[in-house]
Image (cartoon, rainbow, N blue to C red; front, side):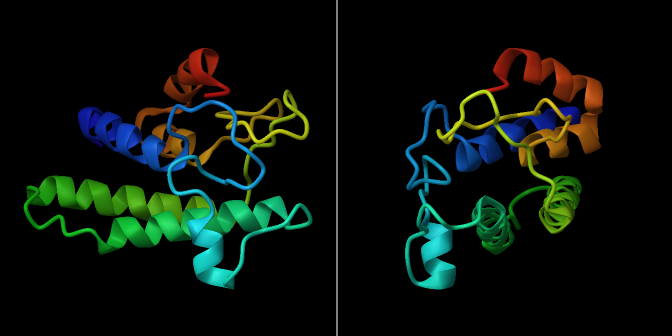
Length: 146
């Protein structure tokens, strides 16, 4: 997989998932699109009793759908194939339902790249599957809670 493309995709995808705004309020699963995914699927905002795994998987499903809907016909075929592969990896990640838990900031929604049990976030997973776990670990050392 083209490492430059992976880096570009990582940057785009991280904006969708995390942005760089630090701490999220409870009401947001994502600082860029908020809980738009949950509202689109269930017709209401999540509550404090809403299962976190449901919130994350709903968000990832929404992002996956947005990525699939985007017209990328202008990209070279090789990049279209790489992009489709990354979207399929995202799909597999979402279905596995193994998301990191941020135990360093209890009660506060702060993104976690790789948690203390080794569970990795969606962006980290894409990096792990395309560039290797060692690259994901290096990113985690610098940006674990960003």
